[in-house]
Length: 456
Image 1 (tube, rainbow, N blue to C red):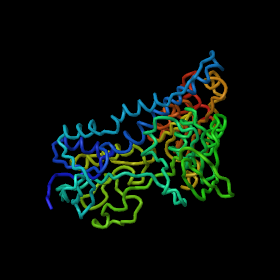
Image 2: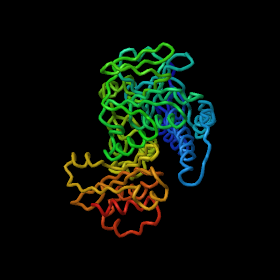
Image 3: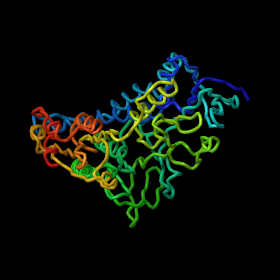
Image 4: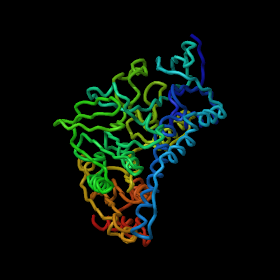
């Protein structure tokens, strides 16, 4: 077996691993990085970028349809090929050369293949070209950033069908006539609404009691109302008994109902890629669903871990945030180090869902003395100006002992942007009284924050 020594070995080149490789290479370290799939990971090829391109196309169609209520008639003719063409362009037709080239320019050597830990500072790679195994030794250590893959529920018959996940759906060139989406989390909700706006007849199935169950109940209520108005068939508390496929999908639900559809999209969560990375060779639990780290992203002897596998949120911005800390530590620099009381997240439905920190339920479960304020976007000035069916809420969650916000949610047009002030407030532990004393520009969706603060 050939051996390559370097200062740092990076196993997995998603957003965190890619960022760390570029920074460490440019700092003069000798870096070898291993990737089994596309350099750049899920976000640019199977997640953030392609999904938001489709979402933007669907949003434009919805705005055009709404024009008659506020300004005049517009004839709308959806063409999914336009949006899918933008996806192919943005992903370079699923070719990773732009990401790989940047790493090479930074001095990083890329090894294509499947890597596995083989003790502290060691990674064994089965090379993709079939030329055998390669041992990589990191003198300073290994950065583990192996990400996640789509979780597929154990439904009878499903495995034998050509169902879609985020790994396949963005390659479609036309919107299905009828589409079943399994899972009403962020991915399922975004894509269900998107395809419906492109003309698909969509059924959204959720095993739990509400859509977007990880967010505030008020969020679920708004989205359920909007989805129903836009013609989506949303089913909650659903059990799928069996899936069959013969030209069309047949989805059998508990109770005997059978849904017949052209396509089936499984968006039932993510599974961390930790089941065969050799955690046991460095003294960690090989059955673990996450890798615990300290504030410097150290996970073990000569091991740093980044991204989804740390359990701190499956978000590109969290992976890069963690990578900044790991790079500082590997270079012997000072902090600041990581903390997670103000993690932000955005779901790009329409209206958008922005959130930061704790939900009300999480704050109460943590034993905090809680006060909440909720204000309607629709009854705020800009909501009224936008016209009928401008749905949304702002919700703030305060720790009354400390007098600060510990969480907030913005369900609004551009909700991810409206979140900005609240994200800063939660991060900086800004006193609620200071926030109440601010000027809130008129007429903005942002001004609804003032109304919510006044409800505390």
